[in-house]
Amino acid sequence: MDVVYDSVGKTTFEKSLNSLRPRGTLALFGQSSGPVPPFDPAILNGKGSLYLTRPSLAHYVMTRDELLWRATDVLKWIDGGQLKLRIDRTYPLADAASAHRDLESRKTAGKLVLVVS
Image (tube, rainbow, N blue to C red; front, side):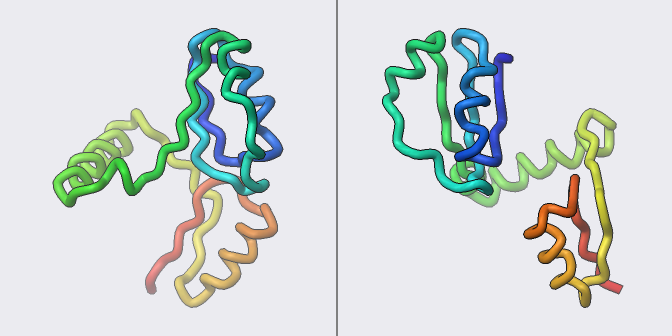
């Protein structure tokens, strides 16, 4: 693969690195299984001059103008069908605690939507 987006962290980090082609990029943006332990950056060279990044949304929407620009792009992609959202479940806002429990117990596979009635 050329790019791997890993939101899990500790338990998938090594598999994510191993799935990359030379000069591939691993974007590690979460750690639901825990933080990745320290490792020797020379591993990236040994596996084919890999790139590793740990992006944070805050650095990509540092100004209101940037937030509006990026949000507009995403909403256009959704509207145009280039980006498909997988909505797993919808909950009334009053049932937000159930939505959190389902997330925490990993009973979901997709987005959860809270709806104001």
